[in-house]
Image 1 (spheres, rainbow, N blue to C red):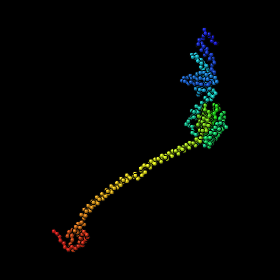
Image 2 (image 1 turned 180 degrees about the vertical axis):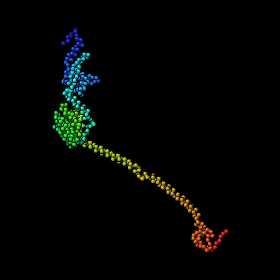
Image 3 (image 1 turned 60 degrees about the vertical axis):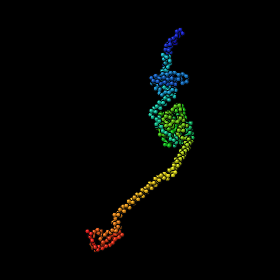
Image 4 (image 1 turned 90 degrees about the horizontal axis):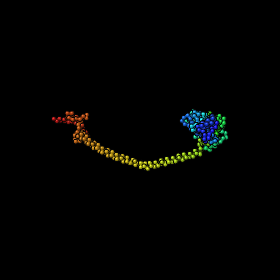
Length: 405
């Protein structure tokens, strides 16, 4: 029943608010679709969201519990959701709010939530671990390319690889890159290339697309197949707004197929410039080192000891000559002293020698057998004696013996 009122008989505010509350809550629970433009998480059981209509400038405030918000999966601002809400009016403030008892991602939001949940599961298993990422070969022997037949991605990769390194060899395997059969064909092509030992890198390329078109590149089976590869894999999906799971599990993520070609092969022109620059630096370093050594050698040669090596020996030669002179003088002095001493000794020996006695006129007598005759009793008349004089011997015969008393 509508309320009756007039300036003279106005209705109490509480009556109007209670009536409005009754009319609003009569709507009951209803599923609504909108875009989350604000998510306010706070401590406590009640959380607040702001939802806006996807077409019109209409937005409402929604309250919900932490359990409902967590059950909806990872939600971000901008996600389109379907919410089961009951409108209510707070009588104390007169504010209208919607209480949400269930929340589900809708459209792309639902797909993104499913992909996000899959990402968390694979991350927990270690498929995204940076430590297992393998480095690409500087110059691969053969490049494997998995892409759509006659696609722009294939053309971009082949043209840029040929431009950067003309001698590169690319083994192309075509596969569907969207649709129900895409995952199976992508896995088959990747496994085929991974089984070839001469393939050093595999590029999986597609030139972007909508979220639905890129769903095969977030498939769990494809992620596990890439993780099991022995060959490094480069993901070149070319989708910047979202990150497919393939980008996370691949060894290298390229922003576009062109970027993948730049990452896989070096630029021949740039490498040639680097070689020329390196050679120039090596030549400069060698010339500088030689010049430095030449200067050091010149400095060494300019030193007196090397300019005149004998000058270093001059002082030693002078000291040696001095020592030699001193030694010669010492030897001569010692020889004179020894000669003088020897002369004195000879004189003493000569003074004591029997020869000196003989020279003074004495003689030494000996019998025929050579025995000295010191007394007259040692001989007899008629005996033959020998007299030794200073200048010879005399043969004597004893005629007479006279003994002195």
